[in-house]
Length: 214
Image (cartoon, rainbow, N blue to C red; front, side, top):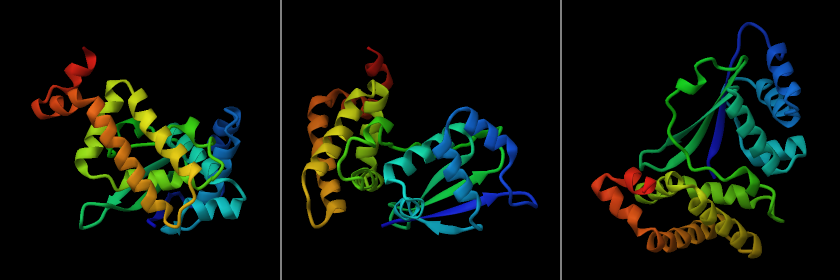
């Protein structure tokens, strides 16, 4: 299981800035603010996992994931996945900012395949989204590009793949859920490739965007 590291971008103080507090609380993003305070309280290079945060805060993992997504959207958190020598994602690095990064939209980050927020709370097993996210992080480059093409095509086809993967994992209890998630996701991608073969052809001739618009 990959670990995550966090680096706090702070001045010569450790208190939570009023700007962040007022901004998040006025938007009624209380969980995001709580997570922000938790992360900001840790020293640089603090190692953690979503599971450990959920356990320490007594939250569900899906609640932690949604709070992280909110902080990203508001510019207080930047998430960067790190690849190992074999090209696979092995780590996730978090930058936490004391003020919303004014150049946040200009930061060049690698595009990521995400689980739709609406799907994070539909499972009886709260660990399922983490298993699916793990499977997404290990996709080969061809499958990643295909899923990005599905997102550009309209998004619904991509969401159906994620939904089917999540519900399948939620319905079955297995000894190796991470491995099972990889298998289920791969099978759903194969089915989608047969249905949306036009996107594969478009990728070869560089016309995916054009075909998607047509």
